[in-house]
Image (cartoon, rainbow, N blue to C red; front, side, top):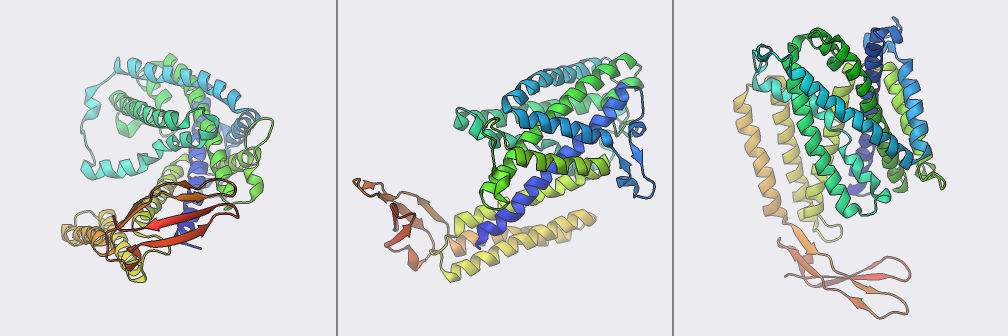
Length: 416
């Protein structure tokens, strides 16, 4: 088992955890806005179990019903899901525009005082929690099998949607805080209850109805994306192979969809909304940490090529970077005022990064192979290898790597 498996296992598990928690965070809000639409309190639709901790004792049967319906829709057809998403997305965009326009007619700039009640540190702490709002953009990448031109359409869809949603987030947050003092915001159904606060009682029904449509879209997109994630992970033999099965008739991964939405429903049934963002942010940040660790590994280490000495130097540099980063984070988390500790940890971080390049050297190559197949003429491409470190393995070497019985790859490594 090499380093790639060390990275891939926790990455795969955290990606799945991320989407389960993300869906479970949206589902309780569905109950809250449904209660607002019916002029009830959210807890009127929940089962309160006093023997359980408060954060896990508000059992929500509605989220189980909604998750089940989403599962059926996601399993039946991707095209059908797309049509449903199209309709509900229109409603979602309409309510966003409505909230911004109607909200600004009742805006009170006095609600912005004080403008930064928790100073700059409060902004960063809030951003760490708000991080979970960006879950789902990477789902676009899982749809490559169902897109005619994924190389062009996926980047456009990813960057375009992220830009639009970021602008919408900022406008909605600004409008919400202009309507109601931030301390009086309803944590369960903030937007619909806000219009009650400013006297626009009729508007709360429009907001609640369209918000339900928007959350249904979010749950459906998450269901499709997380199912395909699990399918790809199973194809990589990190999960049981039956989870990689795609139904021939519907073209959807039925087993993976049922598995993921079942986990989402169980999580949302027991757990209150205020628990989810912290769990989700921890999971996402852990994934990104692993990715950041994998990038220098790919750049500075090549199995069978990097010398043992450079391998050990690389491990020491990575340990230095991780250690200094952890120390800086702990300093920030404790009080954030120990500037002396920052003076120590941040230069160590820079030292670890610069030492990686100096002591290990980057193995940069344009991979070009000479393919030899039975019954065909040799198809020759050029190979250029460059190892900037003093690596004896960087001399002209010919390495034969068996790909199959009919295909051999001849790799030539040499100094450019």
